[in-house]
Length: 442
Image (cartoon, rainbow, N blue to C red; front, top):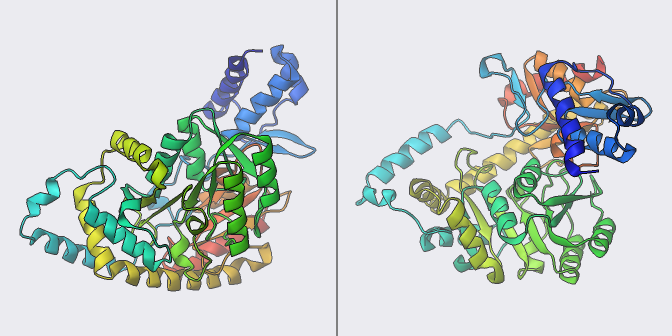
């Protein structure tokens, strides 16, 4: 059976779902019935439902069948969102901001305008960043416990840009990346656009199943391993030093690139050494200033292994050439004048307070979270579907993320990821009580 046949069937069903011909909650034919209707093999019908599940349009309920998901909540990377005026609280996305940051930005821009040569901000920077900017990032990483030289650091337009750069440069289309079965949604997006395969490795709140990862690497050709060893998103675990050493060993044995996402590592400064420490020759360490300063400041870094540095710079040159000079100047100033360090402490204190509120409001629902994280994981009972809960919350102006945004097919999870950084602190408890009501009333 040609691959396009199952896609044609999936596209037709997807069209019917999106146009309302198949409304939310509709029970779809069994795999065998779908195969009979379209005159295809049972395996092709299974691939149809697999594709629809992967795109978040349907959900399989064990023992009951396959149903059209409710899409009116926030359930995916680019799902429909409530307009700001109708929003009570956004618990789907972390955009931490402090009240004083607006005035701080105003003063920073004044200082930059008063420089002797403000026109220099209009000059194009080299791919990978100027040496002064890379040095500032290297010093910042040193304060985070990672000892690298400025030559090893490349400037990117955020961590997502860094991740896309690594995959574009070092993983060929059709190759595979091993990732946790629950992982950062941006990894799914990069894999889809770069046409690489993600292999989901079993994971739990205790960490990645390294035995399963080793088995995957023995049986499959794995080009890279993507991990978040410090403050995993969405589960919040921190891998201990022995697990990091074993990860490095697995990567060396099977000649895999390690992609270490340290975006949220600043929230837990007492964590074990970065994965890069144990395998610097093959680890691409990525991070950004988005969560410790502001999500709108698209400024990140990529610590590049020497053997791959030229390939990574070529991709940076092809994709964006360089980070905007104004953004780079702002970031380097804030790294040098103590702003970043000060804001990181503020974020750590704020996250801890918010987790205390979340633990108090949601503990009886089985809420799971690292006390240092800006998010938590809420597994739901089998008879309570995440998309239905998201719909009910959206009706009341509260946005949440459902587990499918974080899931690597064919794995599945019935849960909510609750982002805590958005609402004002004095309004957070009310927003979390809305989750309690939505879950308990179904």
